Image (cartoon, rainbow, N blue to C red; front, top):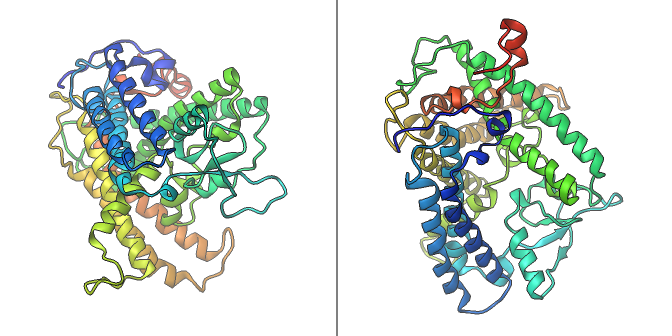
Length: 445
């Protein structure tokens, strides 16, 4: 792909780019979804032929993913954000094919995901609830297959979640919020998100970015402190952009289908309150790719680590395993991002240096290095400091985490700016209270 179409955006289209996906691409997306549902459906049976059937079903998933978002077949695109979103969904489909069909080829019955009961108000937080079996009927198995595709381990059914979900989801109370309260909370979140994005985009718009540079933020004479301000705005805008569509869909489902609030827990668990780098990535960041990354990384890890009965076994501590797994997970996440970044159209204003974008690679591979420094240096040095919410231990650990994230976030911002994802057609808002008050520019045309 080498061009993008241009058209005026409504506020709905700016917040919800899927509305701009070319209709001709929809059959390929439907092929991905139907094939993955069939794969999940076969998981509910235990027969030796089914792993081979899932390998066959991986073919339409991979074909549909390539055709939908990675082949460049739908050019020109409405805007670059739509192209990236289609590339992301395509890459996600490929990862699910690897998780369920390829890595899952060796799964036993007990290895597949299971529903667990959410705690009631009288139960203690922590741990996983009791397993909730699916009903062994066609409809029961289909419900399992459909629900397994829910985001981040939450469930569409009341009082349950998936056993691989984050502690935040597992520790939800089984009783969902009343519909009015959930819709009101979602609406307030959307308004807050709109205002924060407006502030971020207004700050970003104060500079005329040279997008022909591979490092438009870190290699264009911008002072370090201002680099950190811009990086904060770019990363916050990116996070809130992904959260807004999710929040809007959850609110709509609650209004129309009376979906329980537990089906749409917050996509991010107060990431700015993270007390460490490990907490940020393990439980505060969004869990959408969590199971695929962990399943595929476990498969890769097992290729290099022998059983303890082997003469060539590696003697690894729990800490060693954790650090090695983090390297594999971030390397996989890096590859995923490189793939869907590569799906974004290029032109002379937004040239793309190569598939292996050095700035993106630096950001992702610096994260396991930061986790290693935190584990081996920061934690031991702060262990005896006063604890508490604002104790010196928490302040030092949180300070290291946010210094590392903002410093490395500059490299992520380089990619975002260089790929044109801060361009005019890719803006998150159409109406700007901030620029309206300051400059009388209420609509961003």
